[in-house]
Amino acid sequence: MTPRLHYGTPAKILHWLVVALLAIQYPIGWLMPDLHANTPPGAPMILHISFGLTILALIVVRFVWRLTHPVAPESSLPPWQRLSSEAVHWMLYVMVLASTVTGWLFASFRGWSVSYFYLFPLPMLAGRNPAGNRAIDGLHQAAEWLLLILIVVHVGAALAHIFVYRDRIMQRMLPG
Image (cartoon, rainbow, N blue to C red; front, side, top):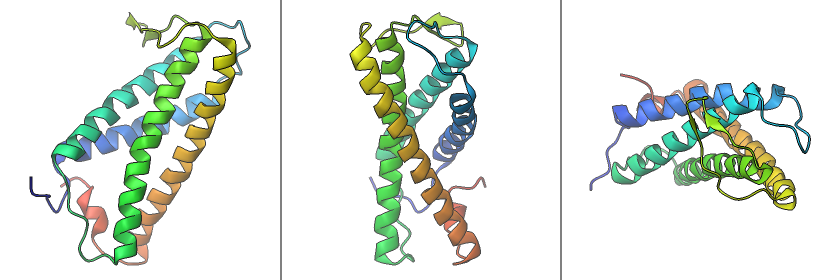
């Protein structure tokens, strides 16, 4: 399969949907109250888990799309920018997967019976496990922070291409 020069419409839609959901997900996660050992999940946690699972589904589809519809690195970029761009993109996929799966494991280790937007129950990935819950909570938080750092790097690079380099790199992911 020959790589294209620009991202197609499905890749752009999936990208911007994940961006929008992460923009909702982070504030929900930060603003919800701390949950103690035997606290059942409330509405904010159900929303957080539901948005997280939506992001998980979208990033899996986006990953498969990216593998089956490759986009050539921008040839006008210096080699270090092409390499760092590819590395950040793949790390973004890994960290979105890591943060969503560890979040689902967190709910499972808590022993929570949760539903997807109150529509249908979600399967548990594991049984109740307080020790596992503490460990996975730390991994979930680390994944969230690393993902946020990668997002800042990614957005910073995009802004640099718009305002510093004044090239058309951003046009590859913008609608149109």
